[in-house]
Image 1 (cartoon, rainbow, N blue to C red):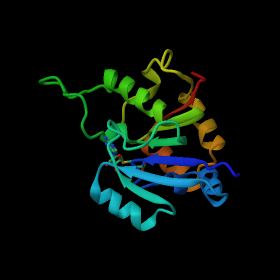
Image 2: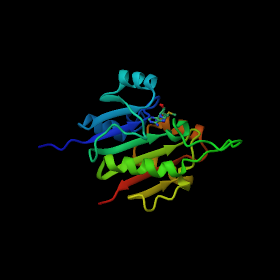
Image 3: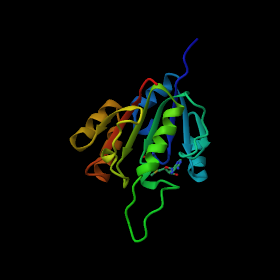
Image 4: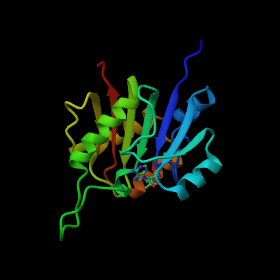
Length: 183
Ligand SMILES: C[S@@+](CC[C@H](N)C(=O)[O-])C[C@H]1O[C@@H](n2cnc3c(N)ncnc32)[C@H](O)[C@@H]1O
């Protein structure tokens, strides 16, 4: 029996993973299932009109997905506009994804199959993901920042147009690839 592969794109609008990555597009053409999930109903409706797979409304911190069934999760620029964030301290204009980020990774790890990957990037106005300590999260982490972001764009074959947009948006885009280790 052919193995089913599932890709979950969290916060897919306005640039779903299959637009920005030729690698993702190719895999969808080769039979991978695509699920676009967003907390916002408006974003979801727009995604549903365009997705080549399934659109579902769901919250990253309360995932409506069974354990051990996802092969790859994309999270591009989700934390910059994160809904339901930890409370900001009075008078502070900064926030961190700190403790909640650890919880989020734990929950994402549960829905991933062993060996499955999470691909994250922040290049609009999100937090600096390279500051997070990924040891003891149950993932092998590869961080792409400074000059290395280009390697991530090449690995996932980002479109030329999107690569240019990224350079325009951010002087230091950060990408992280996490691979779920054996339990
Ligand atoms: C800035 S957009 C990024 C869109 C796209 N990935 C990109 O890079 O262009 C962030 C998206 O994440 C969604 N989002 C924010 N918090 C979320 C949460 N807790 N659960 C699911 N989606 C969330 C927002 O509704 C929004 O559509």
